[in-house]
Image (cartoon, rainbow, N blue to C red; front, top):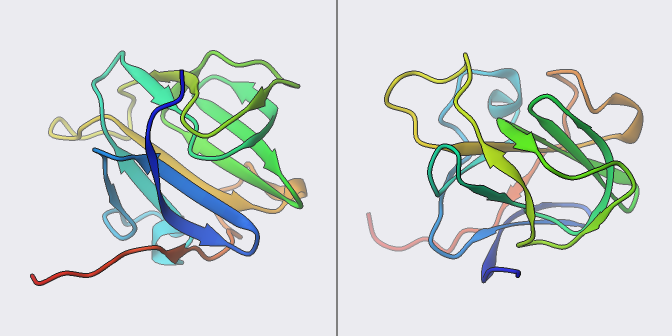
Length: 142
């Protein structure tokens, strides 16, 4: 079952989606990908709860707490979830790809989150050399 999703970011021909009721952040973290405007953290659900795919594509890697999804000429790297998909599977945005976990990167007040980056196919595991994301935000009053 797919959930209602909204577009929150993109890069080139990639669109990144999040559940309608989620929160997201581009700048929360001091990690390299956030400093380079090339990552988004998507918050929803609970630890041990369902993590949904933010994109359409084919699973090319699934290990420990990482899922990599091929989409066109790019790869979407997703971390902080325990995958329950296999290499070669096709997924659509809003479909289950894993379970939210709490790992060593979390401070005790962190909510469940998936960290999402757009990457080049030959270099999707490293923590740098990410592709810049363009937020899809409608600004209201602060």
